Length: 118
Image 1: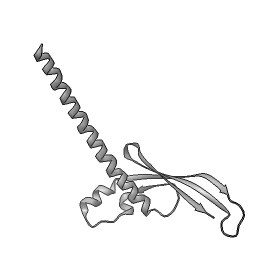
Image 2: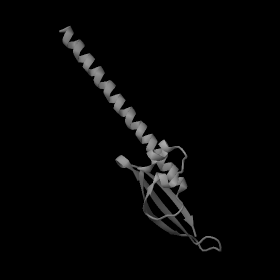
Image 3: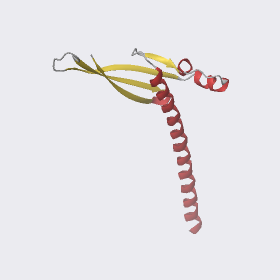
Image 4: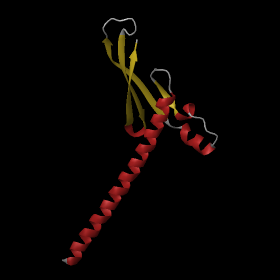
């Protein structure tokens, strides 16, 4: 009976370890892709929907980094959420809220909101 109990404990411990390693690897990938999205979001000026390759945004002299960035594609989609009419004045007539969705491999996405005063 004690051997069965010990076996169950060992198998459970190994499963917990495997789950933790998987979660750690997933978190590492999400953090890396999140950094790529932030790098792209700070570099893109125009607000057109498009696919952006990280190698077009960032230029490195290191060939290894350039090869890694070459195949990373980030999809950019802009959506106007709301157009707000403001009280009439000489400076600002309206405000526009835009949602920018950046998505990368494995359905990792990040949203940025911008407010444009006209």
